Length: 280
Image (cartoon, rainbow, N blue to C red; front, side, top):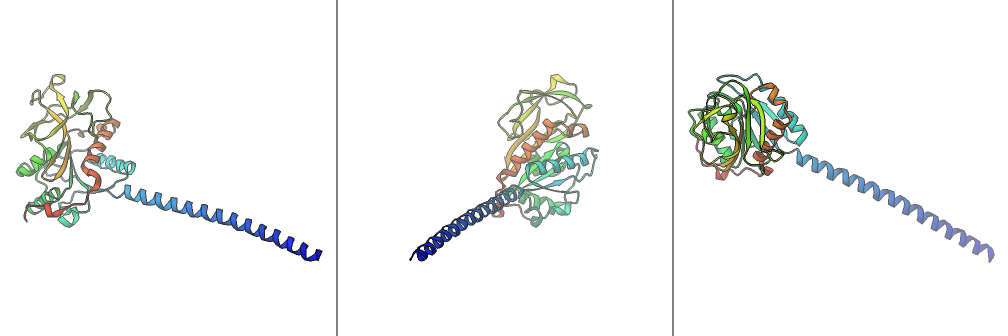
């Protein structure tokens, strides 16, 4: 009888031991599952953050800025820092409806002259009308003078500039991503200071030039230098900064440009070509 009790007691201890072992293994298994799930969710989140893609277009048919290559490098750096992909091209054949659909924003980086043919122009118009984004940098306003739609999208056309010099930039709007990081209403910066014609009255001015702070200004008290607006279904941002290589290294300028790109990306909404009305 005693032997049977002893055997039962030992079996019970064994069962308790095995049960505890199973519990420990289950805890480890559940912890491992939780870790794997966390990694998968993090990777999914990271992939989503990287899903925005922009096209940097830098074809020139007029003056060519030596800072273009530096500009490409900085935009690629911003892409790495802020989780968007960057393609660069000087080939206007990229302006087809099928190709432009890949991009949340198209950046005109110091383009000059007549860079797109008629069919490519229509493809770009349709892209904007479908909800695409546009970022113009510096000489983007020295581009496509015979395409009035583009002039309205960019917001103005270049007419002249004085020598590169420092000027007082007056910040008019601190709520926009391109200016919200600025702590002061005055930004002193050295750059090539464009004068403009055909300024679109619908642009929302972010930065205005104080012509009293330098020589050669021709626009008077209203001299916009960076702006944004909704245009023909899409989002457009322009900054006149970006002439010199040295200027691209400026941390404030990089934050300014990223804010403009962020605005133009616009939450990565899917393009809706049913809203496009330009015809090939």
